[in-house]
Image (cartoon, rainbow, N blue to C red; front, side, top):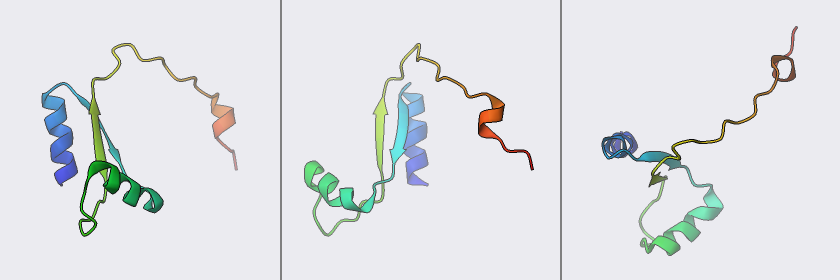
Length: 70
């Protein structure tokens, strides 16, 4: 539940958040960059930031491109 607590805390501060689940090869690199001791376990990271006020809308695919009729 702890990641959700950080997410809601970010909402209170008007911040966007995004959980980042590390792929195994990158865990050691992230721990080294953040100065985390080797004996500690890292399961995920959470990035915070101000959301873009007018984000570009992603292009949408036509329904026929993403569905199959059986």
